[in-house]
Amino acid sequence: MDRRQYTDRVLTSLRRVTAKEREAIRQELDGHMEDHMESLRELGYDEELAEERTIAAMGDPEEVGRELNKQYPFRWLVAGWIAKALIILMIFSTVIGENAGRGIRYWNYRLNPVAEEGSQLSLLLSARSLDLHQQVGNDELWVYQSALGTAESENGRETGAEILMMAYDHIPYGVVSDLIFEDMILENQDRTDTAVCEVGFTTQKGILPIRGFVETKPGDTYVILSMDRFGQSFSLQIPLPTEVEP
Image 1 (cartoon, rainbow, N blue to C red):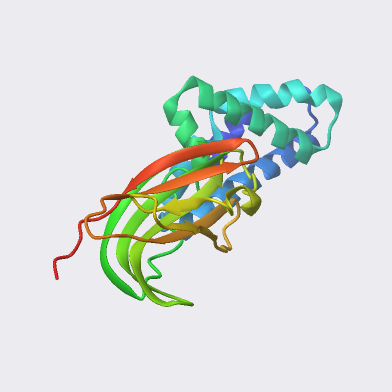
Image 2 (cartoon, rainbow, N blue to C red; image 1 turned 90 degrees about the horizontal axis):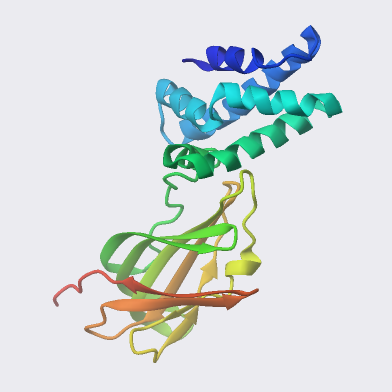
C-alpha cells in the first residue's frame, strides 16, 4: 500500500464532508506523511523504506478515518481536528500492540534514536556501546555509550569515564526541557568523586543530548547516574568498558 492508497482508505470512512473539505483532508494527511518521510530520509532510509515506515506509523487507515469522522460535526479547523484525531489514534496504538507503539516513536526520531554525539575525550582509551533506558515523566533517557579516557579541565587532564546519553519525549512533537535533566549526577564506583552532567545542543526537534564525565579508579567496572528533581528520581549503574592494559 502506497501513500495515495492509504489516504484513499482514510477518506472512504468520512461521511459528512464536501468535496472541498475532502481535498483539504487529503492535503493535510499527505503533508504529515511527507514530513515524516523527510525525517527518515535524513536518517539514511531510502524512499521505499521511508514510505513503508511512515505508513506503518500513521496507523490503521480505517481507524484514522473513523476518528476524523467523529470530530467533524464540531466543524473544527481542518488542521486542528486532524492533529487531535491522529494523536488519539497514536496514543491508542501504544496500548493495542508493540508494533504500533514502535511506529509512533518513528514519528519523531524515537524508535531507534541516532546518537547525536561521539566521544569528546581528548584521549579515548576504550568505549562500550550501551542500550539503557530510564523513563522520566513523559521523557525517556537513553544511555548509548560509556568510555574510558582523559579529558581536559580547568585543573588539567583528568582520567575517568565518559557517559553519552540522549533524552526524548514520548508525546508526538513534544519538547524535552533541559531543566529536567540539567542536574543529573554522575559518581564513580565508590562515590568518592561526583560530577554534574552537561546538557548539549541539537538541531533535531524533541531530543536532548547529554554528556557526563567523572574521575574513576583502576578496577572500576561501573559508574552511578542519579537524579532527584521535580519529583522524578532514579539511580542507574552504568557499566564501563574493559580497561586497556598499559
